Image (cartoon, rainbow, N blue to C red; front, side, top):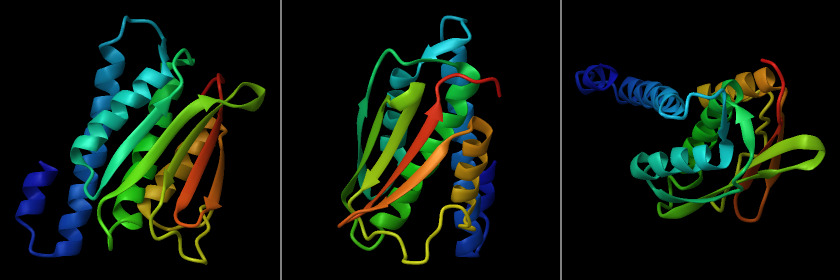
Amino acid sequence: MLKLQAADVDDPVLTQHLADAAYRVSAVAKAHERIHQGDGTDRLDLGIYIEQVCRDLNEVVPHCTIEIEAEHGIEIVTDRAIPIALIANELITNAAKYAYHANPGGNVRVRLARGDDGRIDLSIRDEGEGLPADFDPRSAAGLGMRIVRAFSQQLNAKIAVRRLDPGTEFVVSVPRDQTL
């Protein structure tokens, strides 16, 4: 419905907002669909799940290729897997949208691995234009970063931003299991 509405709008900014909203709704729906296709347990392999999310994104994200390196065997409760997948979705989409908008064709590298102290580290890295000098993830006003912050707070996750030459890396460090 949102895509149909976007096709009827003459304002390019509003059209983009509606398209972004449609994509986010689709990502949430796919996340729930994948969970319900599982074996009915309340836990899943986060590495396999994130690989599936990245494959889905590779089909629809413009201007880049998503490369995934996900450690398998990281079992997590499904209530925590969905917000982690939605954080990945937002950060990958933002990298594709902003890192390579002037120079299409780059890569976004996604890495999921066990971190220190029972944490799970999700890294999203690009080799694009880099962030503006005044960018602060704690106060960024864009909807994507607000979503990342909200889910990170819900998960009690830490977000680190690394400015690279070239590019940017976001590392989200999530406690493995906690009650939401």
